[in-house]
Length: 393
Ligand SMILES: *Cc1c(COP(=O)(O)O)cnc(C)c1O
Image 1 (cartoon, rainbow, N blue to C red):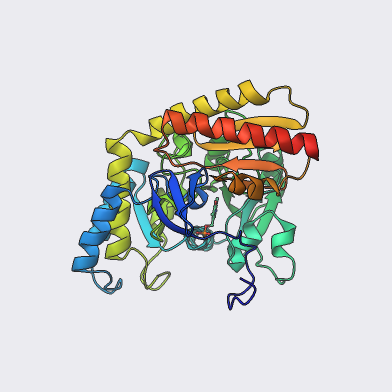
Image 2 (image 1 turned 90 degrees about the vertical axis):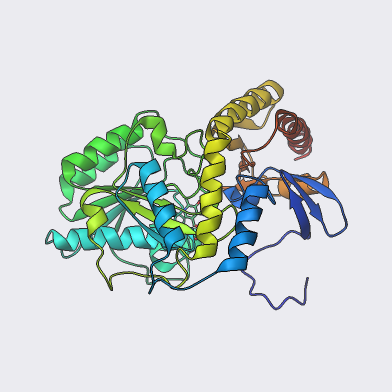
């Protein structure tokens, strides 16, 4: 690995996977691992799902790419489905989460300019994560990720996550705010779940102020939190919503959906993507959406999440060093009182794939197709690892 020609953007673990099936991955030595991360909330249907695999093979045999200079029937169909499922009006397809958020940010700015606001600002949150392009990095609430990339993009105002009062105070002071960009549950930031009612309050504040409510559902969406989209837990509809990660089950695809005025701001030449919404990616995403519905996987995520939380509460409550066990559906965080990055390698040694984020939070994002036995196995393995770790550090 030391002679790699790849730029050093990742500190990679010393393992390569060769094959996957469902919630299992096999490395190049034939060793099996339980995947409790899904390629960071991407493979919600697990690995090599037959429906996705068949859709991809069929489409690869027919047509992969034509560009958006021509109409793409599969993109139209996927767009119709997603817009209907989300109760929105229009959709733009791209290839990643950061690009989906870039589209949202551009929509907000155009929306502002059309209202005569020449210096539009977007409210973003502390500990947020929105991507690695310059604008989305600026929107991200992590100074370490931004350091060295200055000058950052203008036009962002930051407030604490989950605190409606600080938003109201911005509303009293600023006249150029056009939108709020927020994750329903913060993923990279440490599985931070706002108080119930936060999204509803945000929704009404945005209505009142004429701000666009822009939800980054790149990690929370596609069934992961127990509904197809996390905002459905609070019965609201955003003005703009971004998707990526779980949408293509591993095939790169992102989307920015909008309703109302926000859905109408883009015209020809305002935005675009060469690859965005190509037939191959759309075939994968259509198979994902169909499977999520047919197999009731959002509901399954909710049940599994409850099972996992109960299991962890059972085995870890009262253990010194465990600060909090929290989650919504299959987005689960176990917060410790100390940095715990080394747990990732220890879990790997035991055949378990997990993640640690925000230094002290073990993050679990298992596939939605996890079965009860695998869920229980996850609880047993991870609880044992955590106890050993906490006793020895
Ligand atoms: C992963 C993620 C992104 C960025 O997605 P990329 O596909 O890596 O560009 C943006 N927002 C959230 C909430 C994410 O979890």
